[in-house]
Image 1 (cartoon, rainbow, N blue to C red):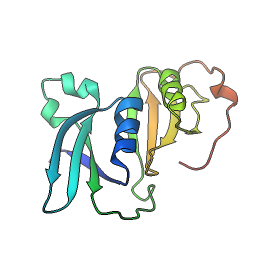
Image 2: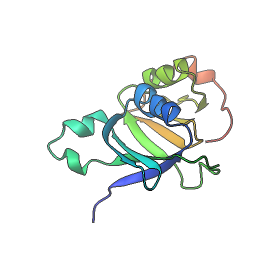
Image 3: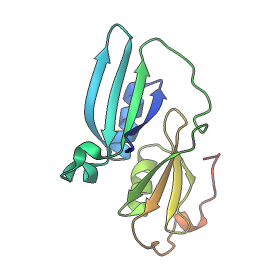
Image 4: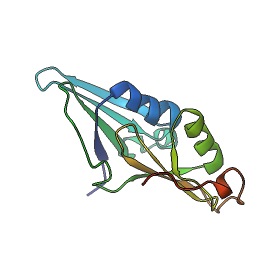
Length: 146
């Protein structure tokens, strides 16, 4: 048995791709358009996973976009996605500059939480040891839930 992917339903495909690819840094691996089923599937992976010789075994996020509008609630009902980053402060700055609220700032230099446009909780973890506490993160309060 091997882990394949996590599926997340999205309401606004462009906003979701902007969040996951432009701001978070994932890359599109493949896309399927299904006219009969009226949906689009887009598989994303972290760039470092794509460079490995075993890239086809890299964990992926599957964005499922149903062409007919639906309301999805409870973005937290499955837990969260988690990604290791080289510099948690730079990752949070890039997200914040892109208009993303940092729900749980990396006050400890190690862990932060944000939410996708569809309310999916995303955890960011500093690679290796925690960075030294730094502003504005060290004094930034939590916002909302994660």
